[in-house]
Image (cartoon, rainbow, N blue to C red; front, side):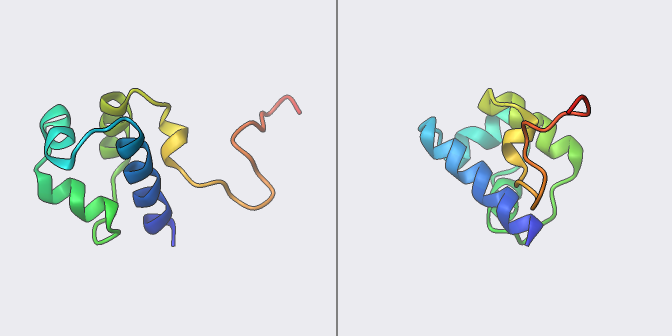
Length: 79
């Protein structure tokens, strides 16, 4: 389920920015098959993959991660 949500978030952000998979692959240095496999939850993304993808998509790393029940991305340790 986690792989699926991460893949969906990457795909959504990529499409919002009108970037095709081939271009994201070039921007990250990964093969197109890696991008496809991560988006389709056929491959687990390592944290380094997510970091590089977030830089390429110009978004926060946390934007790629799903929210967890009872914990939102806005929650901080100070709360």
